[in-house]
Length: 306
Length: 306
Image (cartoon, each protein chain N blue to C red):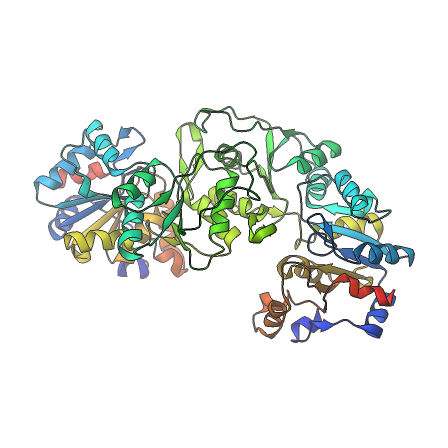
């Protein structure tokens, strides 16, 4: 972090340096999309890196803003893509952490109104948090006359590819109550798809709701520190002995910075080396805190040091 | 304006003052919702005020961010609610002005992808601007595999109560092309409905798209000056001889300020006298520019002066 703020950072990790770093750190936090896999394709060498780290006795955690799947389906994806022995407790998704927040921090009495996918619903159910299971678009139903539930005490917004106007309007009505909590799984603005296409992220839907409700959401996912607090409190991780490996400057690298964890940008995902260097050379503090301490082309670069 | 910036403003308009003001001004701009009507109910006395102003030879224009109806249906609404002799050319809606902008300012070659209601479609059609007429949600269609048109050169976002995720995602894909224009009808964040309910406004949907596309939209509606430019260029209106009457500080009053037009806040809509006074007493310049020069309880207060 000091590196980033004094216009250093972005150091290429190679050979002995990499070995020293891995000796120093006991815990490695990985983002998933763009870091260990891209969609259904593992990053070459990634399964071996994760495997070797665990063999060397490192704690490994996967910290993802992707809220679409429940953790159990992540476990299956890890297996399918050749990552052996990844267990559910090593996976922290923004949907899981949102459920934990509602149960343990907010100690919610009442229901949550959810804009989100199956991943959010399943994690809430597993955590015992009650939620409104909203139907898909009812033809002809409008916000003027649709029923609203009286015991909704929180609104949670995340990626929802079945979003419709009525859902947005209902959430907006619930948020008129100043005592109704307002959470967002994460602020990811968009996600890359194949063929140059993109899809709006949770951050896009959260922005719609924040504008309509004239309130700011409490954000659970990266770069908010809450996901690290979940890991630290459950597993006693010391941030000085951890590194965060990610592909998005404003999400993963800023997350590491906020948690006091050294950061590694890997170039197999969204952000580029040029962006990272431009941030390093910028005078703006809000960019300096997004500068990674280290850069690798791919996490396969870790292999020789293992 | 000088009044607002020097912490005056919010003057109550009464008796002789009101007479003087109306003598001085040749053109009166009215917002619609919350000013001359609320939904399907005219503000008491509003039809008489509009009628008398026109009889006294004043130019009267209706400047509305409501983009859901085409102007022809506004003409019908005016008649239905007792406003006689309002003609289409006196009505400037954000959908009409968006069409004018695309045709005359952007001189668009190609199509517009629209997130919006019938009002937008009809105005585009009338202006001869080609647009993509998007179907409602196609079951099972996703942004990964749906067709995209190759000649889309602009995205226009406005209030759309048939918004769905796929529409948002398509707009987001079109905006990946940096040459694709990005317009929003307006930034109204929400609108009040009966029974304390609210509905998200164009500004909410624009915020979703701005976040996902990481671009800012050019805004056509109030407080942008474009709608006044439409009036001034067509009818030769001098801003110093005009007043703007509206119910929303951040929209109508700021619009008047930006156009160099004196402003009257009427208390039959969204903003309150307390908000206006708090803005007047604030030290922040972004609030000072939203302070009305004058305040009336209702535009019926104009009647004795007419």
